[in-house]
Length: 500
Image: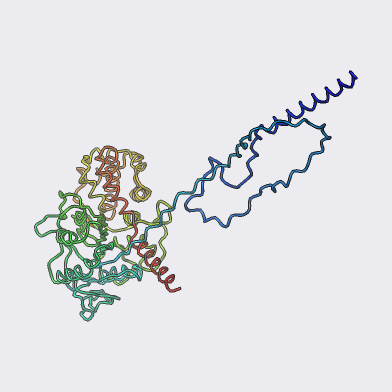
């Protein structure tokens, strides 16, 4: 009996021990399951950029199939357990922590709608003997580059299609014929200009304005070279301050681009100042300009020769680079100096500086800005080592400097000083305004000086002035022709969608 009693007692102890272990195991929380492969980016992985294509429909992830109902384990039968007292309900084990969600990509800002540019062309000489066929050719070429969607107005000579107002060379004889332009909207006179300005320019004040002047220019009659004039048909002229007064009639947020091909046109760069005065405050609007000559020099491009292959004027090179097509229809694809598949006006300007084989010395508005606000003597500027100038230059400036330097045969770190002394030193003599080599030296000197002055401004100038200069340079890097073409395409696409 004693043995049987001990056997029963041992079985009871074993049953209680087993039951206690089983209950404790049930109360312990289970470790969370391993995270399934969901395809979400892990922390630290780059998110798709705004330019990435939109994701397609989400495919099912390669998750493991969900486990089915648990089958009873093949454990041996356990001895019967004594009933246990009821236990209070236990909290459910904590849920497995979900995998972190991938952050949503930042919203993509809509592309700004391209600018709806409009153009005003002012062309022609003051009378038939000064209204050469080349001027008519410049106006025709410019019109051919404008996208069809660009609204434009053209003033030319006396505004008539019947007057024999265009001079051309027929062999050795000078002859005259009527204009052959696709469009003429009025005369290049003061009343004609003011009427177009009122009815066309001021009628759409919010749209950017592209102004192209092709004709003759003269120094101011009072010898104020900062207020030179564009010669109008029949006499008189449109001065810098005349044009400044008309531009003041536009809202401050209306951008204006000027391209002027006449003699002494560099004075019109003063339009970046209030009233067109070189000592005035900077205007608020974005005004940029590119001009065929400095304020004290003539410009080429007014020839009676009819062969346009011989035209080497500033605006022909400028617009060939900007549009990618020269006036003969040939492709121009070597003006993208920064290799971004886009040619800005700054690059077109550098292209003209480099390729134009004339006595022209072109000017940009940024040149005038720097000379007004950065006071650095020429002897300090020209002492700058050439390698430093190149390191500070933009790709377009660098290409023009290198090309002009090669054309002039310049060498060494002190080529700025050597070129300056050659042009302005004691033995320079009187300058010939038609000397192409001298013009190349002047272009090289002026461009290098602008690079050095820009560096000085950025290094130690007033912060607001630096911001204004960078804004001017950004505006000079635009391409009105490309923007106008893009705007026309957007409008066309909108009309197609609306018609569906």
